[in-house]
Amino acid sequence: MKCFGATDKGFLRKMNQDSYIIAYNEVGDVLAAVADGIGGGNYGEIASQESINYLAQVFQVHRGFKDDIDIESFLNYHIRKANELVYVLSTTSKKYQGMGTTLTGILITKHAHYIFNIGDSRVYGVKHHQLHQLTNDHNLYNELLRSGKVTPQEAGMHPKAKSITNALGIWASVNIDLMKLNTYYDVYLICSDGLFGYVDEQYISKILIENETVSNKGKKLMQLALAAGGYDNITEILIQMEKGAQDE
Image (tube, rainbow, N blue to C red; front, side, top):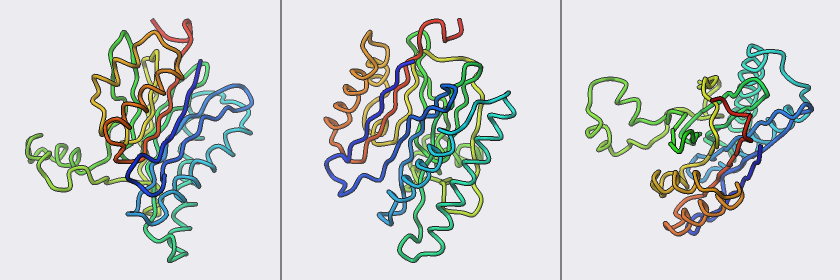
């Protein structure tokens, strides 16, 4: 597989509160994740950096997984430890009070692909030239839809529709969306809302299905996000699977 990652502050924000990793363990498994720091400027970059750095450290010394249960145990345990790490920082220091982060990513082994999500960063997959959003945004819009009490149009009109309802480090415990993929995709894109929030999915899809190197695809996506105004921090990871590593 080929991987590419990039992050940019954008044009309006004073600081880049996004962080990302592309890490390999001792047997060549890949852990890739994006964290978008939150907290209204209250050191969101610390929350994203601390969570990403912790996951990188524990994964790089890992010696491989025996089975799916082993993978799920690893991800659940260490994501919760990352939550604990950020939560303790935010609750024991006035300086860091209120900080938190999204955390979204994928773990790829020879036998399984797992995605995980906390917050509103996203994982996309491309298969047969079709773009699919693989994660569900943890925001008020989706909570309102799940309640069944409002229409999509009514939910979208809510003034806080995009407010996130789940984040790492804000609370002592955290809800983790963890899913084994039944389909292996040709290309994976993990990104913060600085990309998908300003670049229409049809343009993202068009670039991802091009016969280009993964780095060129990533550079084109970043250029589009900046050309759209660069209103937010922008972070992306692209993973292009090798032929034969995908299912039919």
